[in-house]
Length: 111
Image (tube, rainbow, N blue to C red; front, side):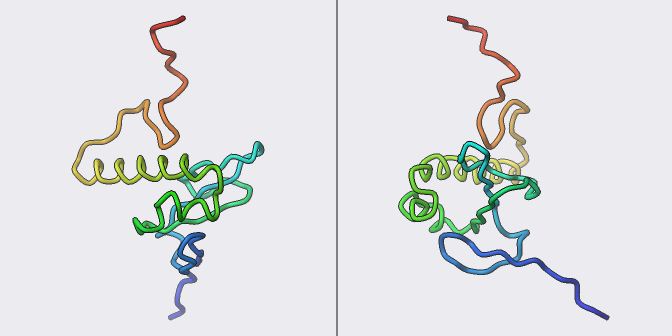
């Protein structure tokens, strides 16, 4: 019986090669901003990160993501927190995403 091909990707921080399913993907949009690609299917330049906490430190992220490292760190923290919440049985609110609150629901206080 033939073995199924498992796509491998390399973490941009620790440079370890791992199965694609074990990594978090970010994609660069047209404006040059890195965005979380939760479905791992968005087109464009992609960067892969492993789940090791050491790879999520801002100083290490800055080697690849430069000025956007702080924002990437915040996104990774939210992803980690959402994953821990899901494991405990409390799902995030529908208006919350890895990119932040949804803009579909404008705030009730208008200026």
